[in-house]
Length: 427
Image (tube, rainbow, N blue to C red; front, side):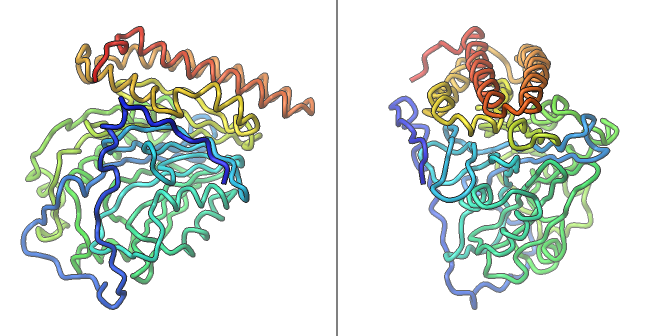
């Protein structure tokens, strides 16, 4: 595989200590029967929980008519971009923790996007792939949602995860459990409307496994974010735009709220023994959010005009900037122009801004959203020019044009943070 390698800077090394979690991998399928639920809520270690929130919209759920999908990544480590052309398979753009294999979210040359949420399960399967590797394999081997569902269904899976996949026509949430269990995959295809997912199982049979058999647990912060996602979508009339989804990823409702008894009261259908509490990731945007992505999948030219709007850091301190999959036609120019995103300096710039404590949480939203509104308008104009070039039989010229404009905009996004005070040095 040809992959753009990441430079390991001393300033980021400390942020990556212990990025690989020490988790037991169970290799004996006979020992993998779901255990019975405890009589009290189960509490697990903070480092074992990763709060992510995903949205998808298609058909009447998208005001633009394009399929929209998003992922907030809630972790603790430095994030970088990858531009990858495998020896065999499709090229893709992805985001991932620095120096780690696989990707957390990304888009490929066909306009297929993917991202996942962590899901609590009692045991792992040592013979399966991690969710980050599954994401990468899907982008390398699949061109559509239907292909992705079939591909994931047939892959051996190490952990519990829900995969969000989207193409120009539809989206899907694919709940999975380790391949010690049967079945290990359930999918909901979304061709119309808006859906969302957090970090608890909602599809059968997995939901009943948790409620009735003590398989994993229902996590209180996940329920709060899920309920808030439902409220946001309802308030929007179940119709969203990319800008509105970006605002969802910045939502601070219940920020730091640790009142788990309120969650129990709101969901009497969940028995007490099925609950688990942990770190307070109750808000969609929270202190562990390290990056966020909003995908917009173009219907007419998905192989060139599909976008990965990337907030390289927590979107409370980082602007969304568009990366078209057309950039995959110009890998050298893309990697040269976006070196700061690939080596981690873009992420660190935004991290410095947060660490400076110049701004309260959410105080930068008006500046970020003003910049993004202008970026969206300019991107629409860029795409119109690119579409004309494609219609004139000049796809290479369209790809080069979008690559140049995306690089310029991504660098402008960093300048925005520097102007806001991110130049402050924090060792």
